[in-house]
Image 1 (cartoon, chains in turn green, purple):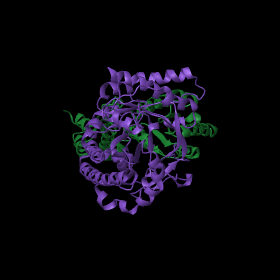
Image 2 (cartoon, each protein chain N blue to C red; image 1 turned 180 degrees about the vertical axis):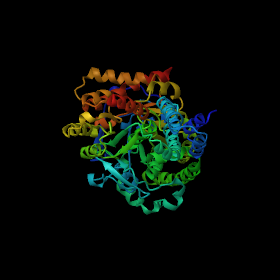
Image 3 (cartoon, rainbow over the protein chains, first blue to last red; image 1 turned 90 degrees about the vertical axis):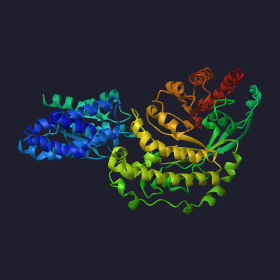
Image 4 (tube, rainbow over the protein chains, first blue to last red; image 1 turned 90 degrees about the horizontal axis):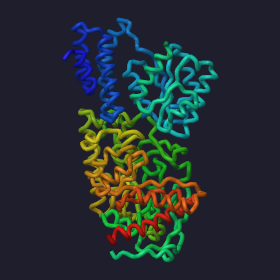
Length: 215
Length: 369
Protein backbone atom coordinates (compact mmCIF):
# COMPACT_ATOMS: atom_id res chain seq x y z
CA UNK A 1 0.00 0.00 0.00
CA UNK A 2 1.35 3.43 -0.91
CA UNK A 3 1.96 5.87 1.91
CA UNK A 4 -0.83 8.15 0.65
CA UNK A 5 -3.27 5.25 0.74
CA UNK A 6 -2.06 4.41 4.22
CA UNK A 7 -2.82 7.98 5.29
CA UNK A 8 -6.27 7.78 3.73
CA UNK A 9 -6.98 4.52 5.43
CA UNK A 10 -5.76 5.83 8.81
CA UNK A 11 -7.94 8.96 8.49
CA UNK A 12 -10.97 6.91 7.55
CA UNK A 13 -10.41 4.60 10.52
CA UNK A 14 -9.86 7.58 12.82
CA UNK A 15 -6.34 6.58 13.86
CA UNK A 16 -5.30 10.02 15.04
CA UNK A 17 -2.17 8.75 16.74
CA UNK A 18 -0.62 7.37 13.56
CA UNK A 19 -1.76 9.93 10.97
CA UNK A 20 0.82 12.56 11.96
CA UNK A 21 3.66 10.03 11.69
CA UNK A 22 2.44 8.81 8.33
CA UNK A 23 2.24 12.37 7.01
CA UNK A 24 5.82 12.99 8.17
CA UNK A 25 6.90 9.78 6.46
CA UNK A 26 5.16 10.78 3.23
CA UNK A 27 6.84 14.17 3.28
CA UNK A 28 10.23 12.48 3.80
CA UNK A 29 9.49 10.26 0.84
CA UNK A 30 8.98 13.41 -1.21
CA UNK A 31 5.22 13.23 -1.68
CA UNK A 32 3.78 16.65 -2.51
CA UNK A 33 1.91 18.20 0.46
CA UNK A 34 -1.07 18.94 -1.78
CA UNK A 35 -1.22 15.26 -2.79
CA UNK A 36 -1.15 14.20 0.86
CA UNK A 37 -3.96 16.64 1.60
CA UNK A 38 -6.16 15.91 -1.38
CA UNK A 39 -5.59 12.22 -2.02
CA UNK A 40 -4.72 11.19 1.52
CA UNK A 41 -7.07 13.17 3.69
CA UNK A 42 -9.80 15.01 1.78
CA UNK A 43 -10.64 11.93 -0.27
CA UNK A 44 -10.79 9.85 2.93
CA UNK A 45 -13.23 12.32 4.45
CA UNK A 46 -15.27 12.08 1.26
CA UNK A 47 -15.60 8.34 1.81
CA UNK A 48 -16.45 8.95 5.47
CA UNK A 49 -19.18 11.37 4.38
CA UNK A 50 -20.61 8.90 1.91
CA UNK A 51 -20.69 6.13 4.51
CA UNK A 52 -22.33 8.51 6.98
CA UNK A 53 -24.98 9.40 4.45
CA UNK A 54 -25.70 5.71 3.87
CA UNK A 55 -25.89 4.95 7.61
CA UNK A 56 -22.87 2.66 7.38
CA UNK A 57 -21.13 4.77 10.01
CA UNK A 58 -22.46 7.27 12.52
CA UNK A 59 -21.50 10.46 14.32
CA UNK A 60 -18.72 9.00 16.53
CA UNK A 61 -16.95 7.44 13.54
CA UNK A 62 -17.24 10.68 11.62
CA UNK A 63 -15.87 12.70 14.55
CA UNK A 64 -12.99 10.35 15.08
CA UNK A 65 -12.06 10.52 11.39
CA UNK A 66 -12.21 14.33 11.47
CA UNK A 67 -9.98 14.36 14.52
CA UNK A 68 -7.47 12.14 12.71
CA UNK A 69 -7.48 14.44 9.71
CA UNK A 70 -6.90 17.41 11.99
CA UNK A 71 -3.78 15.71 13.38
CA UNK A 72 -2.50 15.16 9.87
CA UNK A 73 -3.23 18.74 8.82
CA UNK A 74 -1.32 20.03 11.86
CA UNK A 75 1.80 18.31 10.56
CA UNK A 76 1.09 19.25 6.98
CA UNK A 77 0.11 22.90 7.49
CA UNK A 78 3.63 24.47 7.49
CA UNK A 79 4.49 22.58 4.31
CA UNK A 80 1.25 23.64 2.64
CA UNK A 81 1.89 27.24 3.63
CA UNK A 82 5.45 27.07 2.28
CA UNK A 83 4.10 25.91 -1.06
CA UNK A 84 1.31 28.47 -1.04
CA UNK A 85 -1.41 25.82 -0.93
CA UNK A 86 -4.56 27.53 0.35
CA UNK A 87 -7.89 26.10 1.42
CA UNK A 88 -10.16 25.81 -1.60
CA UNK A 89 -12.40 28.51 -0.21
CA UNK A 90 -14.01 29.98 2.86
CA UNK A 91 -17.41 29.21 4.38
CA UNK A 92 -19.08 31.38 7.01
CA UNK A 93 -21.21 29.16 9.20
CA UNK A 94 -23.63 29.76 12.05
CA UNK A 95 -26.89 28.86 13.75
CA UNK A 96 -29.32 31.71 13.28
CA UNK A 97 -30.59 34.16 15.86
CA UNK A 98 -32.71 32.72 18.67
CA UNK A 99 -31.47 29.17 18.16
CA UNK A 100 -28.89 27.65 20.51
CA UNK A 101 -28.50 24.31 18.75
CA UNK A 102 -25.05 23.49 17.51
CA UNK A 103 -24.91 19.76 16.85
CA UNK A 104 -25.92 19.82 13.19
CA UNK A 105 -24.00 23.03 12.58
CA UNK A 106 -20.81 21.57 14.05
CA UNK A 107 -21.08 18.37 12.03
CA UNK A 108 -21.61 20.40 8.88
CA UNK A 109 -18.58 22.54 9.74
CA UNK A 110 -16.46 19.48 10.27
CA UNK A 111 -17.42 17.88 6.98
CA UNK A 112 -16.99 21.12 5.05
CA UNK A 113 -13.54 21.51 6.60
CA UNK A 114 -12.85 17.91 5.66
CA UNK A 115 -13.69 18.83 2.08
CA UNK A 116 -10.85 21.36 2.10
CA UNK A 117 -12.59 24.62 3.03
CA UNK A 118 -11.67 27.05 5.78
CA UNK A 119 -14.68 27.37 8.05
CA UNK A 120 -15.42 30.58 9.92
CA UNK A 121 -17.76 29.33 12.61
CA UNK A 122 -19.75 32.15 14.20
CA UNK A 123 -21.39 29.83 16.73
CA UNK A 124 -25.03 29.73 17.78
CA UNK A 125 -27.72 32.39 18.18
CA UNK A 126 -26.00 34.51 15.55
CA UNK A 127 -27.80 37.77 14.65
CA UNK A 128 -27.88 38.81 10.97
CA UNK A 129 -25.52 41.70 11.58
CA UNK A 130 -22.83 39.31 12.80
CA UNK A 131 -23.06 37.34 9.55
CA UNK A 132 -22.79 40.61 7.62
CA UNK A 133 -19.80 41.72 9.68
CA UNK A 134 -18.05 38.41 8.99
CA UNK A 135 -18.80 38.74 5.27
CA UNK A 136 -17.30 42.22 5.21
CA UNK A 137 -14.22 40.98 7.04
CA UNK A 138 -13.89 38.10 4.57
CA UNK A 139 -14.75 39.51 1.16
CA UNK A 140 -13.20 36.42 -0.46
CA UNK A 141 -15.75 34.17 1.25
CA UNK A 142 -18.15 32.75 -1.31
CA UNK A 143 -20.47 30.68 0.86
CA UNK A 144 -22.61 31.42 3.89
CA UNK A 145 -24.16 28.39 5.60
CA UNK A 146 -27.12 28.96 7.93
CA UNK A 147 -28.52 26.41 10.35
CA UNK A 148 -31.82 26.32 12.28
CA UNK A 149 -33.14 23.43 14.32
CA UNK A 150 -36.43 24.88 15.44
CA UNK A 151 -39.55 25.66 13.48
CA UNK A 152 -39.72 28.80 15.59
CA UNK A 153 -36.30 29.95 14.36
CA UNK A 154 -36.88 29.17 10.69
CA UNK A 155 -38.06 32.78 10.16
CA UNK A 156 -34.56 33.85 11.28
CA UNK A 157 -33.21 32.10 8.17
CA UNK A 158 -35.45 34.34 6.10
CA UNK A 159 -34.52 37.50 7.99
CA UNK A 160 -30.80 36.72 7.79
CA UNK A 161 -30.98 36.31 4.02
CA UNK A 162 -33.03 39.50 3.81
CA UNK A 163 -30.48 41.39 5.90
CA UNK A 164 -27.67 40.18 3.64
CA UNK A 165 -29.69 41.42 0.66
CA UNK A 166 -30.30 44.77 2.30
CA UNK A 167 -26.59 45.10 3.06
CA UNK A 168 -25.98 44.78 -0.67
CA UNK A 169 -23.97 41.57 -0.22
CA UNK A 170 -26.37 38.98 -1.57
CA UNK A 171 -24.67 38.74 -4.96
CA UNK A 172 -21.26 38.16 -3.41
CA UNK A 173 -22.12 34.80 -1.83
CA UNK A 174 -24.05 31.59 -2.26
CA UNK A 175 -26.26 30.84 0.73
CA UNK A 176 -26.96 27.31 1.88
CA UNK A 177 -29.42 26.37 4.62
CA UNK A 178 -30.15 23.30 6.70
CA UNK A 179 -31.55 21.95 9.93
CA UNK A 180 -34.18 19.46 10.98
CA UNK A 181 -37.33 21.41 10.02
CA UNK A 182 -35.83 22.92 6.85
CA UNK A 183 -36.79 21.48 3.47
CA UNK A 184 -35.79 22.11 -0.12
CA UNK A 185 -39.15 23.81 -0.66
CA UNK A 186 -38.54 26.15 2.27
CA UNK A 187 -35.01 26.89 1.03
CA UNK A 188 -36.45 27.77 -2.40
CA UNK A 189 -39.15 29.91 -0.84
CA UNK A 190 -36.70 32.05 1.15
CA UNK A 191 -34.30 32.44 -1.75
CA UNK A 192 -31.44 30.26 -0.52
CA UNK A 193 -29.12 28.84 -3.16
CA UNK A 194 -28.99 25.36 -1.69
CA UNK A 195 -30.27 23.02 0.96
CA UNK A 196 -28.80 19.80 2.31
CA UNK A 197 -30.30 17.30 4.69
CA UNK A 198 -27.15 16.01 6.34
CA UNK A 199 -23.56 16.98 7.04
CA UNK A 200 -22.04 14.90 4.26
CA UNK A 201 -24.41 16.34 1.67
CA UNK A 202 -23.62 19.81 2.99
CA UNK A 203 -19.94 19.31 2.10
CA UNK A 204 -20.90 18.24 -1.43
CA UNK A 205 -23.25 21.19 -1.74
CA UNK A 206 -20.55 23.59 -0.58
CA UNK A 207 -18.23 22.28 -3.31
CA UNK A 208 -20.96 22.64 -5.93
CA UNK A 209 -21.93 26.15 -4.84
CA UNK A 210 -18.30 27.20 -4.65
CA UNK A 211 -17.77 26.03 -8.22
CA UNK A 212 -20.82 28.01 -9.34
CA UNK A 213 -19.71 31.10 -7.43
CA UNK A 214 -16.25 31.08 -8.93
CA UNK A 215 -17.21 30.04 -12.46
CA UNK B 1 -59.27 -12.75 33.91
CA UNK B 2 -62.67 -13.34 32.34
CA UNK B 3 -63.40 -11.40 29.20
CA UNK B 4 -66.42 -9.16 29.36
CA UNK B 5 -68.54 -8.44 26.31
CA UNK B 6 -68.66 -4.80 25.29
CA UNK B 7 -71.58 -2.99 26.85
CA UNK B 8 -71.67 0.32 25.01
CA UNK B 9 -74.19 1.92 27.28
CA UNK B 10 -72.44 0.96 30.50
CA UNK B 11 -68.97 1.75 29.26
CA UNK B 12 -70.08 5.15 27.94
CA UNK B 13 -71.06 6.09 31.44
CA UNK B 14 -69.13 9.09 32.74
CA UNK B 15 -68.10 8.29 36.30
CA UNK B 16 -66.47 11.56 37.25
CA UNK B 17 -63.91 14.18 36.29
CA UNK B 18 -60.44 14.02 37.77
CA UNK B 19 -57.43 16.28 37.91
CA UNK B 20 -54.65 15.46 35.48
CA UNK B 21 -51.23 16.99 36.05
CA UNK B 22 -50.10 19.32 33.32
CA UNK B 23 -47.07 21.48 32.68
CA UNK B 24 -48.88 24.79 32.85
CA UNK B 25 -52.16 24.33 34.66
CA UNK B 26 -53.57 21.07 35.99
CA UNK B 27 -56.90 20.25 34.37
CA UNK B 28 -59.79 17.81 34.62
CA UNK B 29 -60.30 14.76 32.45
CA UNK B 30 -63.38 12.52 32.21
CA UNK B 31 -63.25 9.04 33.70
CA UNK B 32 -65.49 6.42 32.14
CA UNK B 33 -66.76 3.10 33.32
CA UNK B 34 -64.39 0.33 32.24
CA UNK B 35 -64.69 -3.43 32.82
CA UNK B 36 -61.28 -3.49 34.51
CA UNK B 37 -59.13 -0.64 35.87
CA UNK B 38 -56.90 0.96 33.20
CA UNK B 39 -53.79 -0.02 35.16
CA UNK B 40 -54.75 -3.69 34.95
CA UNK B 41 -55.49 -3.33 31.25
CA UNK B 42 -52.03 -1.83 30.64
CA UNK B 43 -50.42 -4.64 32.61
CA UNK B 44 -52.21 -7.26 30.50
CA UNK B 45 -50.59 -5.75 27.41
CA UNK B 46 -47.17 -5.53 29.04
CA UNK B 47 -47.36 -9.11 30.29
CA UNK B 48 -48.10 -10.35 26.79
CA UNK B 49 -51.79 -11.04 27.32
CA UNK B 50 -54.66 -9.62 25.33
CA UNK B 51 -55.86 -6.42 26.99
CA UNK B 52 -59.54 -5.52 27.12
CA UNK B 53 -58.92 -2.48 24.94
CA UNK B 54 -55.97 -0.85 23.22
CA UNK B 55 -54.26 1.00 26.07
CA UNK B 56 -53.79 4.72 25.70
CA UNK B 57 -51.72 7.32 27.44
CA UNK B 58 -55.05 8.74 28.57
CA UNK B 59 -55.09 5.71 30.90
CA UNK B 60 -51.94 6.97 32.61
CA UNK B 61 -51.10 9.66 35.12
CA UNK B 62 -47.68 11.26 35.19
CA UNK B 63 -46.06 12.50 38.36
CA UNK B 64 -42.83 14.38 37.70
CA UNK B 65 -42.03 16.15 40.95
CA UNK B 66 -40.48 19.57 41.30
CA UNK B 67 -38.23 18.45 44.15
CA UNK B 68 -35.90 16.87 41.58
CA UNK B 69 -33.75 19.63 40.04
CA UNK B 70 -33.48 17.70 36.75
CA UNK B 71 -37.23 18.03 36.20
CA UNK B 72 -37.17 21.77 36.80
CA UNK B 73 -34.03 22.23 34.68
CA UNK B 74 -35.67 20.39 31.81
CA UNK B 75 -38.86 22.42 32.29
CA UNK B 76 -40.98 19.34 32.74
CA UNK B 77 -42.75 19.15 36.06
CA UNK B 78 -46.12 17.44 36.42
CA UNK B 79 -47.43 17.51 39.95
CA UNK B 80 -49.80 19.23 42.35
CA UNK B 81 -47.82 22.47 42.12
CA UNK B 82 -46.90 23.16 38.48
CA UNK B 83 -43.93 25.38 37.68
CA UNK B 84 -44.49 29.04 36.97
CA UNK B 85 -43.10 29.93 33.53
CA UNK B 86 -40.13 31.74 35.05
CA UNK B 87 -39.16 28.67 37.08
CA UNK B 88 -38.37 26.51 34.03
CA UNK B 89 -34.68 25.79 33.44
CA UNK B 90 -31.71 26.26 35.75
CA UNK B 91 -29.25 23.82 37.24
CA UNK B 92 -29.84 20.08 37.32
CA UNK B 93 -28.81 17.76 40.13
CA UNK B 94 -25.22 17.76 38.90
CA UNK B 95 -25.02 21.55 38.72
CA UNK B 96 -25.25 21.67 34.92
CA UNK B 97 -27.11 24.79 33.77
CA UNK B 98 -30.05 24.32 31.36
CA UNK B 99 -31.68 27.01 29.26
CA UNK B 100 -35.45 26.67 28.81
CA UNK B 101 -36.64 27.39 25.27
CA UNK B 102 -40.30 28.44 25.56
CA UNK B 103 -41.14 27.87 21.89
CA UNK B 104 -40.07 24.23 22.20
CA UNK B 105 -41.34 23.67 25.71
CA UNK B 106 -38.03 22.07 26.68
CA UNK B 107 -34.51 22.86 27.78
CA UNK B 108 -30.97 22.41 26.56
CA UNK B 109 -27.50 22.96 27.91
CA UNK B 110 -26.05 26.04 26.27
CA UNK B 111 -23.29 24.57 24.12
CA UNK B 112 -19.67 25.65 24.02
CA UNK B 113 -18.69 25.51 27.65
CA UNK B 114 -19.05 21.92 28.85
CA UNK B 115 -18.59 21.06 32.51
CA UNK B 116 -16.02 18.44 31.53
CA UNK B 117 -13.24 19.04 29.03
CA UNK B 118 -12.08 15.46 29.39
CA UNK B 119 -14.31 12.59 30.48
CA UNK B 120 -11.31 11.01 32.20
CA UNK B 121 -11.60 13.80 34.80
CA UNK B 122 -15.19 13.08 35.77
CA UNK B 123 -14.34 11.73 39.21
CA UNK B 124 -12.51 14.96 40.04
CA UNK B 125 -15.03 17.36 38.52
CA UNK B 126 -18.47 15.79 38.88
CA UNK B 127 -20.21 15.73 42.24
CA UNK B 128 -22.98 13.20 42.46
CA UNK B 129 -26.15 14.41 44.16
CA UNK B 130 -27.24 13.15 47.53
CA UNK B 131 -30.88 12.18 47.07
CA UNK B 132 -31.46 12.63 50.80
CA UNK B 133 -31.22 16.38 50.17
CA UNK B 134 -34.65 16.48 48.53
CA UNK B 135 -37.90 16.79 50.46
CA UNK B 136 -39.41 13.46 49.45
CA UNK B 137 -41.84 13.30 52.38
CA UNK B 138 -43.16 16.79 51.75
CA UNK B 139 -43.59 16.15 48.04
CA UNK B 140 -45.33 12.82 48.69
CA UNK B 141 -47.80 14.43 51.11
CA UNK B 142 -48.55 17.26 48.68
CA UNK B 143 -49.21 14.93 45.74
CA UNK B 144 -50.89 12.09 47.62
CA UNK B 145 -54.51 13.31 47.28
CA UNK B 146 -54.38 13.26 43.47
CA UNK B 147 -52.27 10.11 43.26
CA UNK B 148 -54.54 8.20 45.61
CA UNK B 149 -57.58 9.22 43.60
CA UNK B 150 -55.90 7.79 40.50
CA UNK B 151 -54.64 4.44 41.76
CA UNK B 152 -56.72 2.74 39.05
CA UNK B 153 -54.62 4.53 36.42
CA UNK B 154 -51.20 3.47 35.21
CA UNK B 155 -49.00 5.90 37.14
CA UNK B 156 -45.63 6.90 35.74
CA UNK B 157 -42.72 9.12 36.52
CA UNK B 158 -39.89 10.28 34.31
CA UNK B 159 -36.17 10.19 34.74
CA UNK B 160 -34.63 12.93 32.69
CA UNK B 161 -31.18 12.63 31.34
CA UNK B 162 -30.62 9.01 30.60
CA UNK B 163 -27.11 7.77 30.04
CA UNK B 164 -26.20 9.36 26.71
CA UNK B 165 -28.07 12.58 27.48
CA UNK B 166 -26.21 12.82 30.79
CA UNK B 167 -22.92 12.33 28.98
CA UNK B 168 -23.89 15.10 26.55
CA UNK B 169 -24.80 17.39 29.45
CA UNK B 170 -21.27 16.97 30.80
CA UNK B 171 -19.28 17.01 27.54
CA UNK B 172 -21.44 18.68 24.86
CA UNK B 173 -22.65 16.52 22.01
CA UNK B 174 -19.45 15.99 20.04
CA UNK B 175 -17.45 15.24 23.15
CA UNK B 176 -20.02 12.68 24.24
CA UNK B 177 -20.27 11.02 20.83
CA UNK B 178 -16.49 10.84 20.52
CA UNK B 179 -16.08 9.42 24.02
CA UNK B 180 -18.25 6.45 23.05
CA UNK B 181 -15.73 5.35 20.44
CA UNK B 182 -12.39 6.68 21.60
CA UNK B 183 -10.41 3.87 23.22
CA UNK B 184 -8.74 6.32 25.59
CA UNK B 185 -12.07 7.57 26.90
CA UNK B 186 -14.22 4.46 26.85
CA UNK B 187 -13.10 3.17 30.23
CA UNK B 188 -14.03 6.46 31.90
CA UNK B 189 -17.42 6.34 30.20
CA UNK B 190 -18.00 2.81 31.50
CA UNK B 191 -17.11 3.93 35.02
CA UNK B 192 -19.38 6.97 34.82
CA UNK B 193 -22.31 4.92 33.52
CA UNK B 194 -21.73 2.36 36.26
CA UNK B 195 -21.91 5.10 38.87
CA UNK B 196 -25.01 6.58 37.21
CA UNK B 197 -26.74 3.18 37.39
CA UNK B 198 -26.25 3.21 41.17
CA UNK B 199 -27.79 6.68 41.34
CA UNK B 200 -30.73 5.70 39.12
CA UNK B 201 -31.36 2.59 41.22
CA UNK B 202 -31.59 4.72 44.34
CA UNK B 203 -33.79 7.23 42.53
CA UNK B 204 -36.18 4.58 41.19
CA UNK B 205 -36.54 3.12 44.67
CA UNK B 206 -37.54 6.52 46.05
CA UNK B 207 -39.91 7.30 43.19
CA UNK B 208 -41.71 4.05 43.90
CA UNK B 209 -41.71 4.53 47.65
CA UNK B 210 -42.99 8.11 47.71
CA UNK B 211 -45.34 8.17 44.73
CA UNK B 212 -46.28 4.53 44.19
CA UNK B 213 -45.54 4.68 40.48
CA UNK B 214 -46.20 1.69 38.24
CA UNK B 215 -43.67 2.52 35.55
CA UNK B 216 -40.69 4.71 34.84
CA UNK B 217 -40.15 6.62 31.61
CA UNK B 218 -36.42 6.95 31.02
CA UNK B 219 -35.48 9.86 28.76
CA UNK B 220 -32.52 9.25 26.48
CA UNK B 221 -32.68 10.54 22.90
CA UNK B 222 -30.56 8.35 20.66
CA UNK B 223 -31.01 9.79 17.20
CA UNK B 224 -31.72 12.60 14.80
CA UNK B 225 -34.58 12.73 12.34
CA UNK B 226 -32.56 10.74 9.80
CA UNK B 227 -30.52 8.19 11.75
CA UNK B 228 -29.31 7.06 15.15
CA UNK B 229 -26.42 9.04 16.61
CA UNK B 230 -24.37 5.86 17.03
CA UNK B 231 -24.22 2.35 15.64
CA UNK B 232 -25.91 -0.69 17.10
CA UNK B 233 -22.44 -2.07 17.87
CA UNK B 234 -21.47 1.07 19.83
CA UNK B 235 -24.80 1.04 21.59
CA UNK B 236 -24.39 -2.60 22.57
CA UNK B 237 -20.89 -2.04 23.85
CA UNK B 238 -21.21 1.31 25.58
CA UNK B 239 -24.82 1.97 26.56
CA UNK B 240 -27.11 -1.05 26.46
CA UNK B 241 -25.46 -2.93 29.37
CA UNK B 242 -26.13 0.06 31.63
CA UNK B 243 -29.60 0.62 30.24
CA UNK B 244 -30.24 -3.01 31.15
CA UNK B 245 -29.24 -2.28 34.73
CA UNK B 246 -31.69 0.62 34.92
CA UNK B 247 -34.41 -1.62 33.47
CA UNK B 248 -33.54 -4.22 36.10
CA UNK B 249 -33.80 -1.56 38.81
CA UNK B 250 -37.41 -1.19 37.70
CA UNK B 251 -38.22 -4.85 37.19
CA UNK B 252 -36.84 -5.99 40.54
CA UNK B 253 -39.33 -3.62 42.17
CA UNK B 254 -42.22 -4.80 40.01
CA UNK B 255 -42.16 -1.62 37.89
CA UNK B 256 -42.28 -1.45 34.12
CA UNK B 257 -39.83 0.49 31.97
CA UNK B 258 -40.87 2.86 29.21
CA UNK B 259 -38.08 4.14 26.99
CA UNK B 260 -38.39 7.68 25.68
CA UNK B 261 -35.93 7.95 22.86
CA UNK B 262 -36.53 10.45 20.09
CA UNK B 263 -34.99 10.02 16.68
CA UNK B 264 -35.02 7.51 13.86
CA UNK B 265 -33.77 4.77 16.12
CA UNK B 266 -35.30 1.66 14.61
CA UNK B 267 -31.80 0.28 13.91
CA UNK B 268 -31.13 0.27 17.65
CA UNK B 269 -34.24 -1.67 18.67
CA UNK B 270 -32.29 -4.95 19.06
CA UNK B 271 -30.23 -3.24 21.80
CA UNK B 272 -33.40 -1.95 23.46
CA UNK B 273 -34.81 -5.47 23.48
CA UNK B 274 -31.56 -6.92 24.85
CA UNK B 275 -31.74 -4.34 27.63
CA UNK B 276 -35.20 -5.64 28.45
CA UNK B 277 -37.23 -2.47 27.97
CA UNK B 278 -41.00 -2.93 28.09
CA UNK B 279 -42.23 -0.01 25.95
CA UNK B 280 -41.03 2.47 23.38
CA UNK B 281 -43.02 5.16 21.57
CA UNK B 282 -41.15 5.63 18.29
CA UNK B 283 -41.34 9.01 16.62
CA UNK B 284 -43.19 9.02 13.33
CA UNK B 285 -40.05 8.95 11.15
CA UNK B 286 -39.58 5.34 12.22
CA UNK B 287 -41.25 2.58 10.22
CA UNK B 288 -43.98 1.63 12.68
CA UNK B 289 -45.37 -1.17 10.52
CA UNK B 290 -41.94 -2.79 10.28
CA UNK B 291 -41.42 -2.39 14.02
CA UNK B 292 -44.72 -4.14 14.79
CA UNK B 293 -43.93 -6.89 12.30
CA UNK B 294 -40.36 -7.49 13.48
CA UNK B 295 -40.51 -6.71 17.17
CA UNK B 296 -44.19 -6.65 18.18
CA UNK B 297 -43.76 -9.87 20.13
CA UNK B 298 -40.74 -8.56 22.06
CA UNK B 299 -41.74 -5.12 23.29
CA UNK B 300 -44.80 -2.90 23.41
CA UNK B 301 -44.90 -0.08 20.89
CA UNK B 302 -46.64 3.24 21.21
CA UNK B 303 -48.52 4.46 18.16
CA UNK B 304 -48.66 8.24 17.96
CA UNK B 305 -52.07 9.62 17.09
CA UNK B 306 -52.07 12.32 14.44
CA UNK B 307 -54.18 15.29 15.41
CA UNK B 308 -57.55 15.47 13.67
CA UNK B 309 -59.11 18.84 12.92
CA UNK B 310 -61.54 19.80 15.70
CA UNK B 311 -64.30 19.83 13.08
CA UNK B 312 -63.75 16.17 12.06
CA UNK B 313 -67.05 14.35 11.52
CA UNK B 314 -68.06 11.20 13.39
CA UNK B 315 -67.41 9.19 10.21
CA UNK B 316 -63.90 10.61 9.92
CA UNK B 317 -63.22 9.91 13.59
CA UNK B 318 -64.51 6.37 13.26
CA UNK B 319 -62.37 5.78 10.18
CA UNK B 320 -59.30 7.16 11.96
CA UNK B 321 -59.90 4.84 14.92
CA UNK B 322 -60.26 1.87 12.58
CA UNK B 323 -57.00 2.78 10.85
CA UNK B 324 -55.10 2.76 14.15
CA UNK B 325 -56.48 -0.64 15.05
CA UNK B 326 -55.65 -1.88 11.57
CA UNK B 327 -52.06 -0.64 11.94
CA UNK B 328 -51.51 -2.85 14.95
CA UNK B 329 -52.05 -5.79 12.57
CA UNK B 330 -53.54 -7.93 15.30
CA UNK B 331 -50.59 -7.30 17.58
CA UNK B 332 -52.01 -6.62 21.02
CA UNK B 333 -48.79 -5.05 22.29
CA UNK B 334 -49.58 -1.68 20.74
CA UNK B 335 -50.85 1.30 22.69
CA UNK B 336 -51.70 4.81 21.59
CA UNK B 337 -50.14 8.12 22.47
CA UNK B 338 -51.98 11.38 21.91
CA UNK B 339 -54.04 12.10 25.00
CA UNK B 340 -52.58 15.57 25.20
CA UNK B 341 -54.49 16.61 22.07
CA UNK B 342 -57.78 15.66 23.72
CA UNK B 343 -57.44 18.47 26.23
CA UNK B 344 -58.37 21.16 23.75
CA UNK B 345 -59.58 19.24 20.70
CA UNK B 346 -63.02 17.61 20.98
CA UNK B 347 -62.40 15.48 17.90
CA UNK B 348 -59.36 13.92 19.59
CA UNK B 349 -61.33 13.30 22.77
CA UNK B 350 -63.91 11.48 20.63
CA UNK B 351 -61.16 9.58 18.82
CA UNK B 352 -59.82 8.21 22.11
CA UNK B 353 -63.31 6.94 22.96
CA UNK B 354 -63.80 5.49 19.48
CA UNK B 355 -60.47 3.62 19.66
CA UNK B 356 -61.58 2.30 23.04
CA UNK B 357 -64.87 0.92 21.70
CA UNK B 358 -63.49 -0.45 18.45
CA UNK B 359 -60.55 -2.13 20.15
CA UNK B 360 -62.84 -3.59 22.83
CA UNK B 361 -64.65 -5.46 20.09
CA UNK B 362 -61.55 -6.33 18.11
CA UNK B 363 -59.66 -7.65 21.15
CA UNK B 364 -62.64 -9.70 22.33
CA UNK B 365 -62.72 -11.33 18.91
CA UNK B 366 -58.99 -12.03 19.07
CA UNK B 367 -59.35 -13.52 22.54
CA UNK B 368 -62.19 -15.75 21.38
CA UNK B 369 -60.09 -17.23 18.55
